[in-house]
Amino acid sequence: MTIVVGYVPNRHGEAALDAGLAEARLRGGDVVVVNATRGDALVDRRHLGDAAAAELEARLAGLDVPTSVRRVLGADVAEEVVRVADEVGAALVVIGLRHRSAVGKVLMGSVAQRVLLEARCPVLAVKAG
Image (cartoon, rainbow, N blue to C red):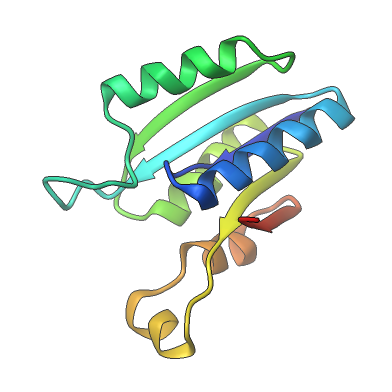
């Protein structure tokens, strides 16, 4: 049973990762961590660089859950998370949520909302504690 975690290197991404790992332990599954970006900015703090990806992989390697990390460049972040979930036959997608005003959602869109609506498997949305 594979669990896909939509990950960004911040407290929301860490909350999603923690929840995904906990679900994998409960279900006896593995975790695929997806860090996606559109690549439309020279510096994107949501995307893992080589050093940060290596650090995350090393941190995950010491755990009791099989994990892999995928860094994805695509036109649409939500679409990439859903695509990977479909590709690996995910039983669950876990995403972190942050509060946004109604106007903020309209102006900037919502990756989380799109994943919730488009994923073909259940989605667990978690807030950072």
